[in-house]
Amino acid sequence: MSTLHTVNKSPFSNNSLESCLQLCSEQDCILLIEDGAYGAVAHSPCAGSLQQASARGIGIYVLQSDAQARGLQDLLDNIEPTDYQGFVQLSCQHQCIQSWY
Amino acid sequence: MKFTVVILGAPYSSAASYSAYRFCRALLEQGHQLARLFFYADGVHNGSALTCPPQDELDLQQAWRQLITKHQLDAVVCIAAALRRGVLDAAERDRYAKPADNLACEFNLSGLGQLIEACATCDRTVTFGA
Image 1 (cartoon, rainbow over the protein chains, first blue to last red):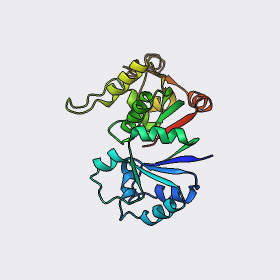
Image 2: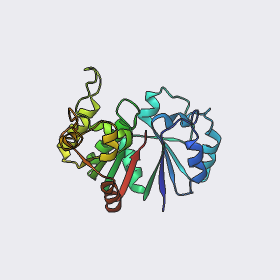
Image 3: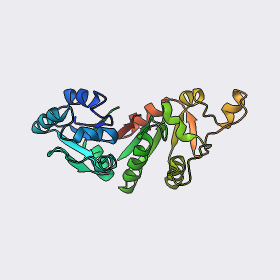
Image 4: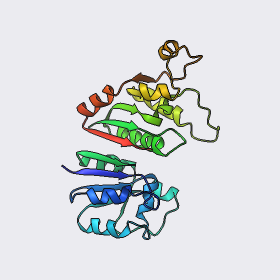
């Protein structure tokens, strides 16, 4: 059973993304929303772990509107921008949605 | 698919309420069913009818009320969380002999059983934490 993990806290101030990455399985996806979008920048504290997760086949997404609202540029290469329509589709693709907040 | 959406954040305190609102709109646009909205913890403040945000800002509570009316959604505000935060309907106002009530008519006060039932009967439960 695959899980969509949503993370809404910045890894600069909170360890929810780190905890999420430790519990993520291969078929899961992570969606960075709200302040969680700070996790998508190249110099974020979890950048290395996110790259490793991506290499394991875990899909990493960021809500583009939340990244833009925070003026975030220089996002990690293997993070895919998405919108709320994509958020809903990801919710349908996974049996469980785990919110980290 | 049948969705339940849980909102834990008060409007203007965190992004949770606005994120949940946009998510709900997107899922309804895609033709999914939104079986229940459950406002819990600080999320109960979304049900207040007395908020007055500046005119040049989004009125998030009004946006929720319009969405609930338009799609005839079941919007439940947790009664225990609401009472201790001063969000009351007319019945609770009378029960506790308070001078006013403030729950907007689009919402209903009810218990956690409504959340459990919704989780058990829906395909997906999505929580927006504060």
